[in-house]
Image (tube, rainbow, N blue to C red):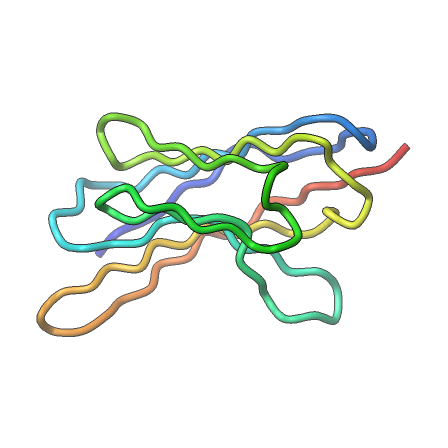
Length: 119
């Protein structure tokens, strides 16, 4: 079992910046994708940004160019730096860790952290 622990989030004005962090409870030795999703009220959860165990990154269309995902050298912790925030970025943000082994794929989710962009 793996736990993912989120930190960051809060309230920021439009145009401001925030950083979200997510840490896995142990090192992962299989292929994995780690990143952030967000869910707006009444909508499906959508990708914000992710990074694979071999360093490939992927971004949601609505955040590309404004958000940057990075990873600590321990490869257990990822950060997403959110800049030029807009009111429509307001959502609950969830960390996800997807591990793929020969047995299959397992998803681990954080509890979510609220990001509110408001003047």
